[in-house]
Image 1 (cartoon, each protein chain N blue to C red):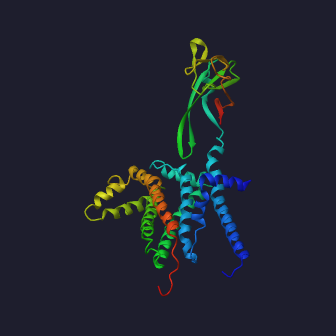
Image 2 (cartoon, chains in turn yellow, blue):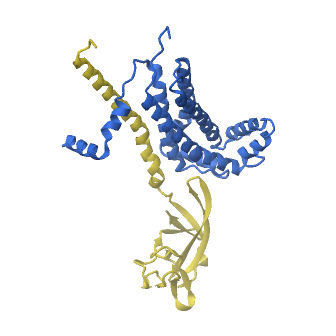
Image 3 (tube, one colour):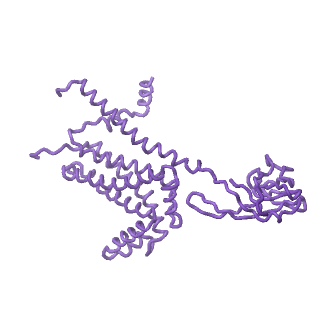
Length: 160
Length: 219
């Protein structure tokens, strides 16, 4: 070998740096796009939309009235129909409160029991009052309320 | 500090001798054609990574396969890029593997004592082609469906057992949900497992025997 040691070290260092640099570029080219690719679905905001429940005249005074409707949902590559139920309560026929039927404890569905004038959750015996406040059991907060509007005699709630 | 840590690790893992055996081994003076094997290896790694990423969303079921691929390509951020890398990387894999084989063939590098490296290499090429064939069906679009109809039909012309082989490949007489599921399973489990096994032997031999020099004129 006629080359000086200096030159050989430089050549080796150059190759080392080049390999690390190219490796970094390749790693970055796959690694960086992988992050939005992985967390993408979590970032996607559920779309808000107004769901038509039905004729507002169906709401009885002072009794939570159940409205059931189906809504189209898209999760990933699957389009499906999902059942959506809420209780609507009015005390004066003017102002409404639209309550979710999902128990705030662990997400079971609550049911209005007319005889006992309260909502009952079958999972852990939670009891909610007519206005959704917690009467007994483990739920940490009252039943969730939806934003609503009344148009042309129909009641709509905002979902999302 | 860093040197101490490296020494501490080396005492316990013996990694330096492994590193020296793999990366500091002596190689003859060769040309750029000798990098085709490494290029294939790197591409295999990226195919593995992008393939794993694709399985997070892909569903091997006729009802949803195409929709999930469309979802990856159009809805997911960078999904088109990950799928694109896997798609084009697949073609590049076949080209590079064949180019690597031709280099080894024309420079006579398959000869003693490297016969087993060559034989494992030929099987690795078959595995790469298998990856291409099974992967082509997975998007479950018209092109995939008819290409696989034709491709499996070719298996069917084998004399005697052809018809039976065709049924095994398709998992029945027609292309169906069973075909898609078994092509997917082959693509993500059977072929990768075979590839890793043979690649282990292949690379062990490359490191153990070393690579051949460019033949001289009078050889």
